[in-house]
Length: 58
Image 1 (cartoon, rainbow, N blue to C red):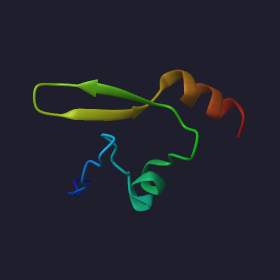
Image 2: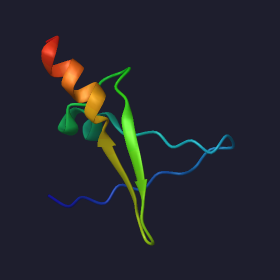
Image 3: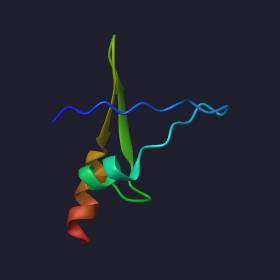
Image 4: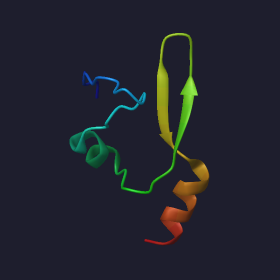
């Protein structure tokens, strides 16, 4: 499911992940994400440690 979403980096170097994207991925306030960097991409994934504790405490 590829979808192009464009965001602007603010003066503090932040970007906002749209609500639609967070909802689609099941990401909530307080979730921890892991950031991987490749030559041409930045990849966000749910932190394994955080994902395990989230699944144990529904």
